[in-house]
Length: 124
Image (cartoon, rainbow, N blue to C red; front, side, top):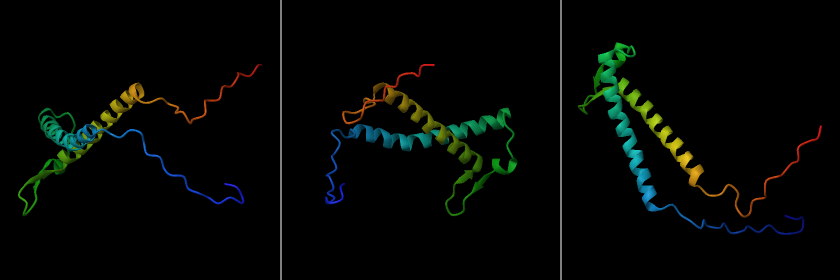
């Protein structure tokens, strides 16, 4: 912008592509499915831990508590293990997605990018 020119905003160009609705649906299903699978895995993991004594659990956290007026039990160790398994599950998905994106994704530089600088090595 020069000193004597007025500033005009350029219109934002829309992307030439859009995310296919199938991929949005798969993402929605995974957001719901991974925590459910993590909770089921946490229940199995805690039961096997109690039987095989892999990791010592404090007895205060291994007890089930009943929530009044709702009528269901809650176990803090199962909830903590489910949260941990949820993070692990989403982390694995991110690693798989980034690997696939690096193989199949678009080119690194677009048509408006400047080419990378080619430098000659210094002579010693």
